Length: 221
Length: 241
Ligand SMILES: Nc1ncnc2c1ncn2[C@@H]1O[C@H](COP(=O)(O)OP(=O)(O)O)[C@@H](O)[C@H]1O
Ligand SMILES: [Mg+2]
Image 1 (spheres, rainbow over the protein chains, first blue to last red):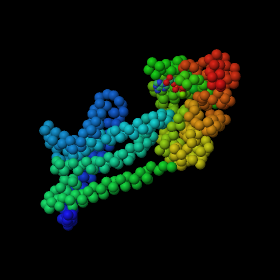
Image 2: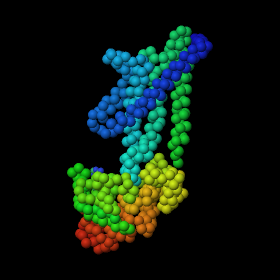
Image 3: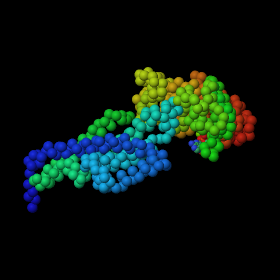
Image 4: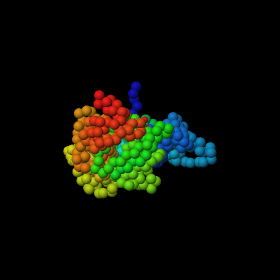
């Protein structure tokens, strides 16, 4: 009944292709998180202001990013911009869409983190003679950083897993590359077992690294 | 000297300070008493420029707090303030809590800042808590940490806003002892308190605050033992009952 025979040598023959795909996956993950981190800050501050045009714009961004499927967001960037006459390759379409998605999640994360710091901390800093900037830098942000740290690490994993949707518009990230590689032999199962293993290894490495960094950075009595 | 002249302050349409005149001389301990919501905290916040005022003037050593060209960050170094909530910086050890402002604001070296912080922690009796995070300190210890943090900027004046009100009764004494110690060292202090006994014994003068005005001000024993104003008498009767 269960007489499937695994043919691993076929997979190892395509190993370099899979690695190349994993590389694209990592690139998209790192770049999209880096840009989103920078973009999410002004968004979080605009949302905190609670009113005004920039607050409304930020709210639309956050709502759209968090309440529509990531695949739809990728289609919007790839085909939507195409329909408007702006053609970008699948790489930049996926990078753009994942960044858009990350930014929405991170903005809410940062806003929550800022709200979680006791408001009196600001006056405590100012009353010691620190400027507003010095207070944010030395007192507020380090506390926000600790609050958002592990949610942020989760978002890295999300960004990486979401990037697999790039396959659908022809991007050879890890999933796309695996799909290509198995199309010769159709040993789909073996190929995707290996791809899953690679995803898992990357995700776990990020999480373990994050724990080590946290352990060193946030010494707690 | 801190000089408060005809100060008015409102939050929107709510008039909180309605014409206050008060002088605090060098070396003096002035206690501010009065009902909740009478504007005591707001007045302290105005003195160190955390809150703007609508009318009048506050001068600290001749510098006008609310003048446009006043460098508030510099002025605040003269004025230490300690709040009811301890507001310790939770991500820093006790030593780092105290060393932060000297290092960042006065730009002294890290080693000097640590030595200074160590000295002030010892001074308030926290010499053995240098590497402890605030979450591991009792309320009384956190409040003494807040005092050390303010003292490390070597201020000329200390403002205390109900620093024992959030404490468990058994922890009040250690904080009041610290205040008494500062008085004995000649520190100029404005102390907002509900503790009439402390105010009478430690204060040189007491000002009784009512509805955003100073209803009565005088020598501490006089205000408590022989108040001139009927409002003061009624207030004391209520809090001492
Ligand atoms: N930031 C603020 N915004 C609006 N109203 C305030 C603010 N701070 C204090 N108040 C109001 O001002 C009044 C005086 O408050 P406060 O100075 O804290 O009194 P006290 O310290 O004597 O209890 C209260 O009615 C209080 O609600
Ligand atoms: Mg108060």
